[in-house]
Amino acid sequence: MIPLALSAQSDGLAPYVTRLRRQRASNPADSWCLMSTDTKSLWCGAHGLVEIDHPASALEGDVILVNPAGERIERVLRAGSPHNSMLVTERCDQLCLMCSQPPKKSHVDRFDLLKQACLLAEPSATIGISGGEPTLYKAQLFDMVEQVLQARPDLHFHILSNGQHFGADDIGRLSAPLWQKVVWGIPVYASDPVLHDRIVGKAGAFERLHESFDHLLLSGARLELRTVLLADNLAGLPRLARHITILLSHAEQWSLMGLENIGFARNRWSELYPDIRSNFAPVGQALDIATLHGLNARLFNTPLCHIPPAFRHHAVASISDWKQRFGLKCEACAAKPDCSGFFEWHPDELLDQVSPISKREI
Image (cartoon, rainbow, N blue to C red):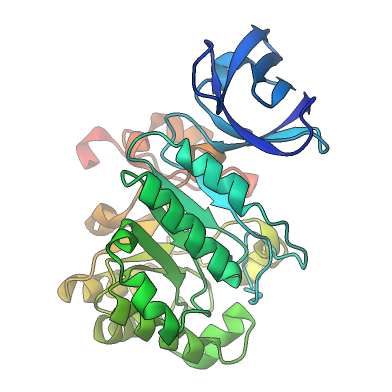
């Protein structure tokens, strides 16, 4: 597992953002390496010194957020990685049964620091934004995105949201051309309002979600729909596919997501986890309905060998590199380079539930 937070000591007076370079550079946002061993590296920049418990070779080019008081740094944007995502808040107004990032009541405003980090991103990067629920701080979020894209029009954003906070007054703002560089990833878990509301732990969420979808449609916003596969919603996937193709056909993609064994799902795994290896039929029917209606449907976080061959073209090697792993049996699989594998926290006893794919089957 690739560490995103590292122990560090800094003489900085307040949290700051800097980009790490092996050689001294003229950009005042950069820090350059003074010393490195196999376990530590020392960097110097406009904000002072920072010693990180990690070698320089693994950090070069990273954009980091230094927290002197907390004696740690966060690798906000890792050089060369396509999986960079910023957590803007840990607050949320839903309580999803399987939430991988259980919400907190407190919030630390870091929008200005995160904006500085975005401005240091690699050319043409796509930056993810997640929470909690980012749109609880909609004004700050919108301001940050617009300021970054005005200064760096080469960048793109993918923002995860529960879709509870878009209103008619957002339509004009989100209609601006720069918002075409933003994709909103919004979950819908069932076509049945009662089931959807029970999964997200919020009465009336389904109705409010569809009000937001109307506002996003009128603004021309780009939309990715997301559905986590659960034991409770598996049978209803074909009905959800019809619901989406009728009411939300403007979505660019429907992403069906494998369940993560982390957060709230860890202690509810046995009741939440659907074994699609033995019951893929509802998933297959949903994919067929989406395809028939021209909706791009993809399978995320699901090993290729858990998917029947006829549907493997829907699969995406989606698990971010910093939290991806494979079982021992996976080493013999010819499809491993194109496979999502498993999350780092997937139960050890389930890692061997794989069937290596031969070159002949690809």
